[in-house]
Image (cartoon, rainbow, N blue to C red; front, side, top):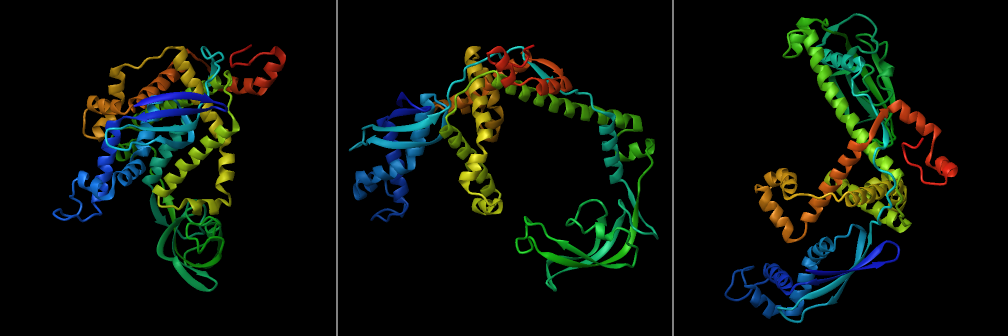
Amino acid sequence: MKTELTELPDSRVRVEVEVPAGTVDRGIQRAARSLAREMRMPGFRKGKAPPSLVIQRVGYGAVLQEAIRESLPEWYEEGLLRSGISPVGDPNIEIVSAPEAEGEPLSLKFEIGVRPPAKLGNYKGLEVGRAEAEPADEIVDREIERIRGGFAKLEPVEREAADGDVLLIDFEGLLDGKAFEGGKAADYLLELGSGQLIEGFETQLSGASAGDQRDVKVTFPEDYQAEELAGQDAVFAVEVKEVREKVLPELDDDFASEASEFETLEELRADIAKRVGEAVDERAEQDFRNAVVDAAIAASTVELPDELLAARGAERLERFERRLAGQGMNPETFLQMQGKTREELIEESKPDAERELKGEAVLAAIAEAESIEVSAEEMVEALAHSAEHERTTPEKLLERLRENGRDALVREDIRVRKAIDLLAESAVPIPLEQAEAREKIWTPEKEQEEKGELWTPGDD
């Protein structure tokens, strides 16, 4: 597939693509088979007529139109990958010339926004705040208490209920004097202070004793999942059957051996400290890497037209809408719940779109400046998980991706990760408190006003 690239104003490009005759013919054959599924032809079962007879029956032009409808997204994507650009937003696609018979190519062109290049500032040796990896004792204590709570026993008591107690209750809710679905339960265990039920429900049962009957008045939240109840006032008739006190086990070696595979409480605490430490360290490292990228972005310049930010904002919204649809929620319903239009959400997403585009541009520029290469071995390693999922080998999957140029996406992803590794390895970690204090004192605008040049983290 041949491509020719022409730069246009406002970070847009025009890509002219020639789809080879063989590729077009395969698309036509595929379209003919699709049409055959809906046709009955003498001497053939439905859907089994050969493509050549389908073309003869409905005409080459009609089959070509079906082929373009089915295959244009595929041809566009391959042309996009072959051109090597980083697109932003939706394209304007035009068929320039179509074949009149088999064995002829097809020409198309499209215009689309592209991510602009970054003008790099200083990106090595950046001083960036990093949180201490050592977990605080209180984190371990909280985890111990969480495990301990799971082994608590509930014992009935003859006194008024307080926070932390568990009530055994029956309740029935009324809306305008009528019962409603889901508003009734028997022998329900409710821990006071847990926030299990609607806001205000538990507080009205504080101080209750066994045998008490109370009317609990609540208002359902405006975003309540049951739409017919959202924002409505309801009254629940509650009978308190028992007040139970949570009795926690003693923090000793017996508790440790019952709650874990360890024989002593000291061993259990050490294991929790190790696991929590690893999790905290992993989070601190990820936050540090993100901060290093942010610092490199702050030290660089990327010109982003507003149209490009809107296009990326639309992409972000479309991805979010697809996730909603995948979860069974209508995106239009979400918009109604938010009380906003798509245009308003796109406008609100522009700051995130700006950070995203700048990050991509800066990391791509660093990879280029550092001549970062990706070996075949790294490609194979990166594809191992996907290959296993598709029940093939990484080598075969890579070969398949190379056929349509999709290997470029994998290569670029690896280059970006290696660029982040380079930034993080060269960065100088400083205490998070020091970095935060510096941010309060110095800003890019102040520094530029005083020096007349671009501020970079690490300047004194």
